[in-house]
Image (cartoon, rainbow, N blue to C red):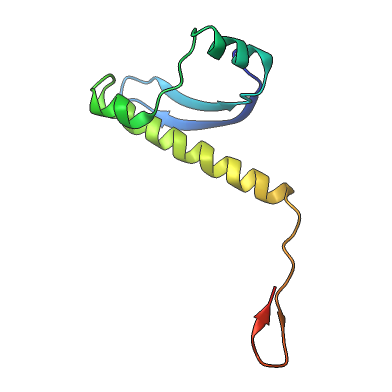
Length: 98
């Protein structure tokens, strides 16, 4: 395994019946750091993959969905654990202070 799993989402099924999953991993783990240092794994942006036609249009769509879902899950997970924001309080002049 490349890293500790953080989030997993099911993206759906292909017409062939294959189920697509996406998983985010903890990139700070030693196995990920070592893999990146040894060039065994190379992180690449999604846009060049699409522009160069390295994968099918259907798969690039699934990769985009995966990135969006995992980003959203990461934001909502961190928002649940973050300290609450202070409430805004009205001042005498009618403006709002945070």
